[in-house]
Length: 223
Image (cartoon, rainbow, N blue to C red; front, side, top):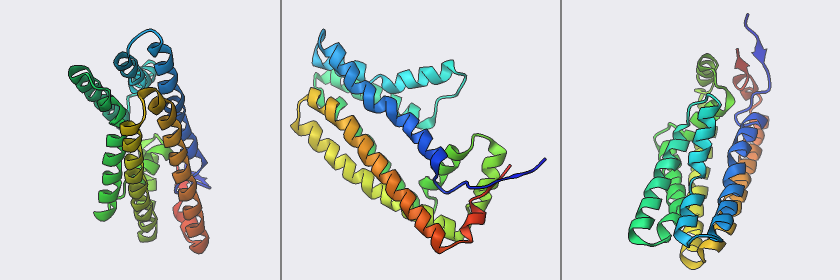
């Protein structure tokens, strides 16, 4: 039986809840882990342990019967590389600058995806909207409409700029502040910037939909 589920926006409450679920551990755990471990070990060891949050997230997903996400695997790879370099060269800067490197790569990826007309925001919205391949395929067909693609391209440009600016801010913190201060400040600041970006994205999408009412049909999902 086929039915139409109404109210699936280009980026709505369901996607927002998914992002919040991802941000929560990343905001709270690194600083907390660093604070606890640093009281008994050196800075490098504490930073290395605090960098294990992506690995913990992947393990929890596996225990729940879910496959690790591509983004999660990328974070684990970067964490492992940064920890390895920091331990080998005895410098915490490689761990502290990991966030800046990831933000820069993400910003470049969003910008390039907009330039080649394959916006990453569309791909991410599809993945956050539904886990079912058939539903995702139907929604992808609807979201190939030129006006919808324009929305996603503009969002990708905006996120590219935001992430590149965030990378500069994170690099500045890593180079000028102590490791403990960076671990305490950087995750909440990064989460705030991300949530602000999501809020601006939601406002933009809703204004675009009000200006183009016909998009309401394109954002419904057939299941």
